[in-house]
Image 1 (cartoon, rainbow, N blue to C red):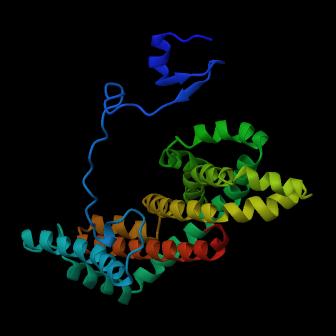
Image 2 (spheres, rainbow, N blue to C red):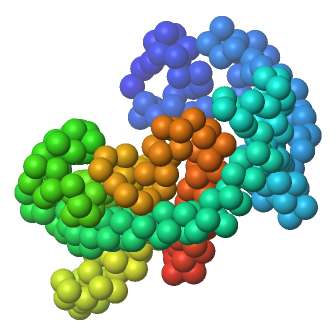
Image 3 (cartoon, rainbow, N blue to C red):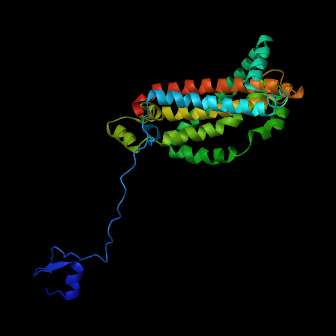
Amino acid sequence: MNLSAADMDLTGGTATADGAAVAVHAGPGAGAAAFAPLPRRQPPRRVPRVLGVRAPIPRPSRLVLTALSVLVPLALWQLLSAAIDGRPDYLPSPAQAWAAGLDLARDGLLLGDTLASIRRVLLGFGLAVAVSVPLGIAMGAFQAGRAAFEPVIGLLRYLPASAFIPLLALWLGIDEMSKVALLFLGTVFFNTLMTADAVRRVPGALVDVSYTLGARRGEVLRKVVIPFSLPGILDAIRVNAAAAWNFVVVAELFAAEEGLGYRIVRSQRFNQIDRIFAVLVVIALIGLTIDVALRLLRDRVGRWTS
């Protein structure tokens, strides 16, 4: 087979009798027009360990950053309060909010309001978890469950739960049931979808291997799908627990006689801004405690997935 000069130039070598190209060493300037020289890159600069992407940091550095994340906002709060002469009726200082919290605690009001709000969260959000976790597992593990439930849940989650307050008051009255129902409606749909997403992240190879080894459908769910997705399910509960505390305050703004939200409304009525800040700090501390507890539980039950 004969090759033309153009063919030999394109192949960059010689040819045998059967047409197979044989590579030869190109000259110093061969291919310069087709391949530009690689750019020279400067050697990477050494960055501190705390700025490395997903790099572990020393324990002292982590403790310092954790302390600063609390102390810096407190310092800014103090500076803003001092800038307006520490007016407790506008922006009280941290010390004034602390003193107001101590007054509420001595009167027994803070403990009663805190217990009332915790009870409502446990009832409303606990019921939402009891419904959303099994439903989310069904949606994430079975295509039939996803097709049956995801469209309607995806639609309902965009309805603001606070818009149901007039309806809940009409249907359930203004007592505890309407407040618990508001918490349920505000969290059940999001927790369901987040649980389903956690279940869908289970690798398909694990399910296939389980069936290959002779596992049945129930065993795959109990021993593969649920254990693997349990840390993600706990993360979903941890995120939506914060939403539950937002909704309990909203629920207690309407026709309540106790609770942290009720205490905020009552303090606003009498222009006791320092008490409002004290109650907000209590809500933040309760939320932080719940968040840390769920993180520890997630790390403990999900060690095999890391």
